[in-house]
Length: 120
Image 1 (tube, one colour):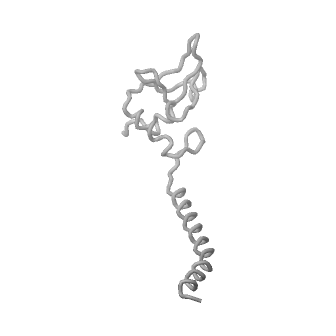
Image 2: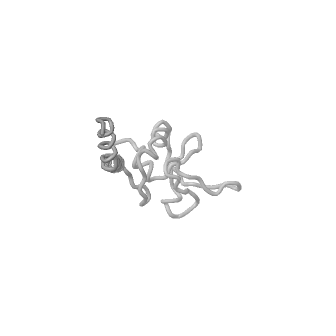
Image 3: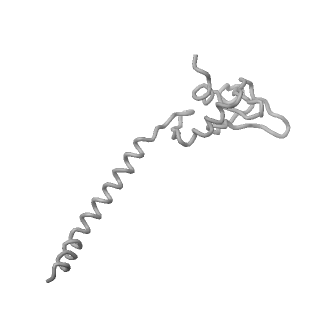
């Protein structure tokens, strides 16, 4: 048996172990990444910050005024630009009151207070 054959035999015998270790390292990295992600709760649901951060940054550049939502003949609801909460005519303030921009976009009260409202 030549030295090259011995090296090939050794590499082949360790390949399953090396492969198993690589898989475990990859799994460990994935778990660490998942644990590093931060979440926020909106209307009782968990959202990844990275999924809403672009909308939040956009909304911070707008002017918002608290209003009671009212529809018209062609439109019976709007959605929050951050979490897509449904806003419509309702006695329930959670659905009937929100923040409207000059461009007629809406935020729910929860998203406005949690992400946009200026700190006191």
